[in-house]
Amino acid sequence: MIGDKLKELRQSTGMNKKEFAAHIEMKYTTYNNYEIGAREPASDFLIMISKKFDVSIDYLMGVAETKEKFVEKQLSAHELLLLEKYSKLDMYGKSLIDAVLDRELFRAIEQYRNFNT
Image (cartoon, rainbow, N blue to C red; front, side, top):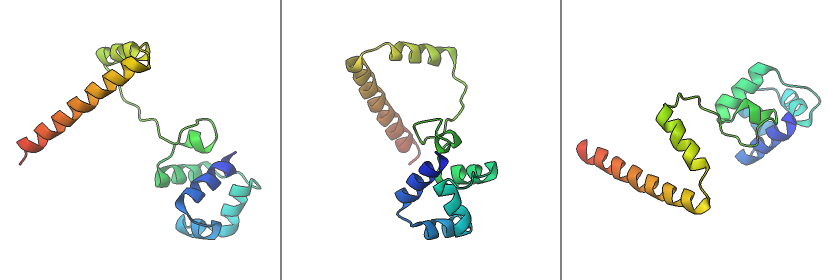
C-alpha cells in the first residue's frame, strides 16, 4: 500500500525511480525497495516525504483517500453550528452558500488590498 502511494507521488513529479531517490537524497535501492514493497519505510522517512511533498502520512499509509494534511484548528461554537447547518443542505443550497462565501472573500481581499496601498 505505501509502495503504491510512493509510486503515485513519484509519478506525479514526472521523475523515474533513480531521479526521485536522488531528489529525496536516498539510495536508489532503498527507495526502490520501499516502492515495490520489499521493505517497509521507517517513520522518519514517512515524515520526511509528508513534509517535502505536503501530503498526510495517513494518505501514504492508505488510511486516507485524500493527500491533504488535516490542519487542526479550534472552531468556535458558532463555526461548528454553521458547519452543521451547511452539512444538512442539498447541493443547490451548498452551491448558493459557496457563491456567497466566494463573493464575500473576494470583497474582503479587495478591501484589504485597497487599505494597504
